[in-house]
Image (cartoon, rainbow, N blue to C red; front, side, top):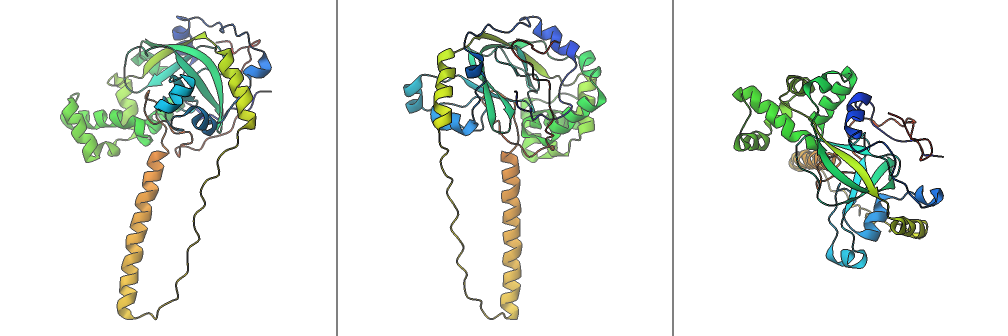
Length: 320
């Protein structure tokens, strides 16, 4: 039985938009010869990082020289369904990759994993990722209001939406598309944080902004690699995290008026530090899409609802 897929609601585009792009590469599954029991084995992200190297958060983690010398692989791509809702969900199936920034075809063939549920990732196969036409104004307009609102809100809330918010803010101030230097100035000043979801949605409605799309086609499936996962993951033991040292309680000192004022000031400064650290942690938890950029496993954005999404199987795939 397939696990329940954790996925943000109202991020998926309508079927016509998806089908039109997938038909370019075909909707058929790549023929995988490995037995289904082995194909269905899923792993955790910390296992992949500990075994094959690379960050546990990046979409396309760089593999260190020593690890690369061990296994010769530096083509890992990890896609989170919350922000890549059209990523492959069945091994060998085609998919779409979205970004708020444009770009070219991806170089080479990518070893793609998709997050199925919390810290559970499945190897999908080896994929070519080619640039496809961006969403047009008309395609954006036919999406439901909930979908457009969700994307507008997430672009404002997540780090990967910073450039979009910066351009929207700059256009409002300048009355035109900003230069790179002007955009950088807006971002450095933090004024892009004042951009609202309604302003972002309006920018897409007008065609000032477009979501870029790449088509993903499975061109191979590494049986030997998946068998490695089947062999190693069940026996892998996650390293224990270092526990914090217990605080040593100091004897209380007699409180005077002067020391009370100093203590109050210290508490205020400590509170500011805690708040700043908390904001940094939230920023680190943000999901991102850009290839090679930080792509956190668990973000602190919208509440994630655990709902059953028709996952499909190799014998009965989802029909678009």
